[in-house]
Image (cartoon, rainbow, N blue to C red; front, side, top):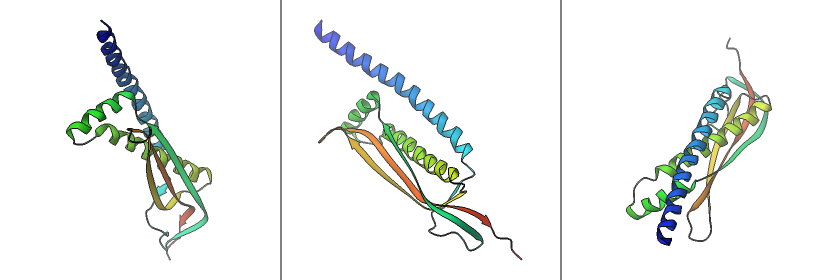
Length: 156
């Protein structure tokens, strides 16, 4: 009987982790998509410097950081995936959400400064583990670049 209770608790936690994790992930993606439309006017470039036909002014360092945690269900499924190998899709969505969130926060900071372009974009990723030899608990992503209030110079 005690064994059934323990198995039942594990199954219940897995189910709750799955349900609430899916709800939280869908809400986060919905928020990300909405804000990507809002800050779509802030352009991003990997180039170190603006083209010569862009008049850049008011350069500022902008950053965006996000830490996203993995839910209990995904942690369990990832543990099973480690046994057989292969793609870890649950972590792919975790990294995708963190990356997009960090970029959005960087774009928001640029927009707050009155800038419409960000150059020399860099993205750093780090995992935050639950201790020595334990599974990943969260993923941190830092996006940074140089924001400028630019405008195209008229060609004559």
